[in-house]
Image (tube, rainbow, N blue to C red; front, side):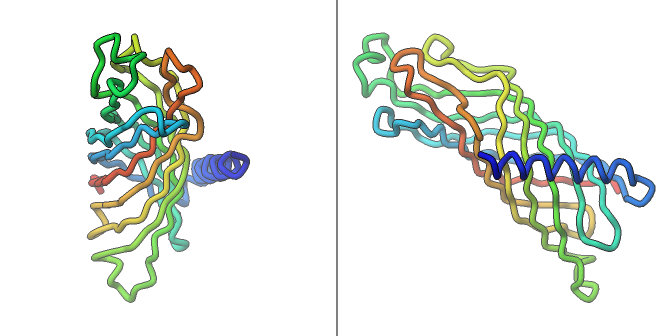
Length: 210
């Protein structure tokens, strides 16, 4: 937990530093779209069987590149849907309520902050394809959910994300990311020690307007 907090502080500090030196940076905006593949991972994993679920992700991204060093920072505002099928019917406490295998859906506004490194010393090939890695925190604000009679949900949660990808022709960035909750995402109303976190893979593309 301490390392995660330090990483988040470093990313935020990098963004703040870039903002104060904006005259020396290149700023641009883009449109982001992607697909989540989410696992609702329960602390007591033997109590409920869960199947991963897909969900969309879409929004806007702003990026500031620091010329000459390969580093950049970005911030996004994204609508994200995370889901998973939970087999409540395996346990009598939920089966007696008429529950079976239910699709648990969470709608959120995500604000990811990322520190990126782009490897640009490729003898000009980076103008076509530039490899990159990224990491940072995501602040997730829950705006919609179902199964409220079964689960309680955290209204605000923090995830950490890390990813690898490439920038193509200096306009399109494509990356594969792994996201995981720092704290719990939801908790069942009965058997209240049974809490869960989101663990999510995502495939994301951002097209920059310049």
